[in-house]
Image (cartoon, rainbow, N blue to C red; front, side, top):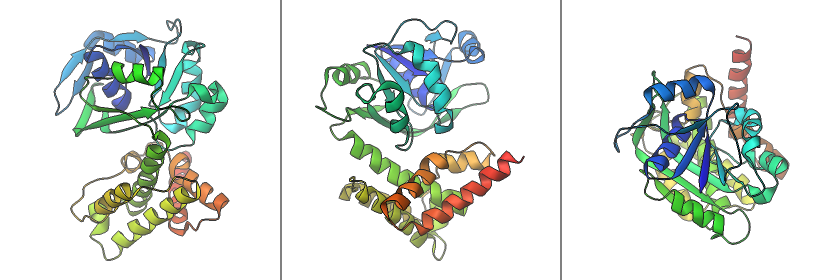
Length: 308
């Protein structure tokens, strides 16, 4: 199975690199400066699971030729439009597109561009970034990728081929029979985490250690879960229990990547994550008072950033 990973940043670089290390046929579609660095120094992965330097197959917009069996998108939401144009030449009659992005709004966009039957459901969980010299830095030992058909039988030929292609990497890979449910459960938790840590400017533990912080996090979770219920994707009891345990832990150092981006003055996925949840709540008649406050905070940040 020929796999094309758009970009070789923290997320795509880790999963694509580890898949290539395990023997998968992986090509990275990257900009020329990134391609030049990888040609010279290799794709370097630093991880508690083991460091490695790879020399993967590369393509740029000028050299991209032919279609691939699967294209993996791990870009930020604000880069989705440019990502779609970048991968379009690689999408042939039988190509599948697998977004492992945050949220759910990307599926509406990708369905319009490539038709729903081409677009698989997917998510990943990893804390990874690029280091100062372009190396992929995996923070922690956990890395997971989940994928599946959004409609029809879960064990389709293409998903089984992908399951085999991703086998053996330094990550957990799972073919899901309920991928949209999995996506929504991550979306609910991520919205809660992003809204809480960005609004309070601290980790879960720092928030939970205040007089009312744990209650604020609980209300953000409750509102997000109510939107999921109204959308037909009620969070399962085990996912709810896991989320509540994390969010009530005063020793929990977890923060959202959105908060880490905000702290560095970078663009954030506020509209795609918290904003989309607020819009869905409004459409479905769900109370989202705490989420609205968090989104207003993020909108102020975005306006200040735009104004320089």
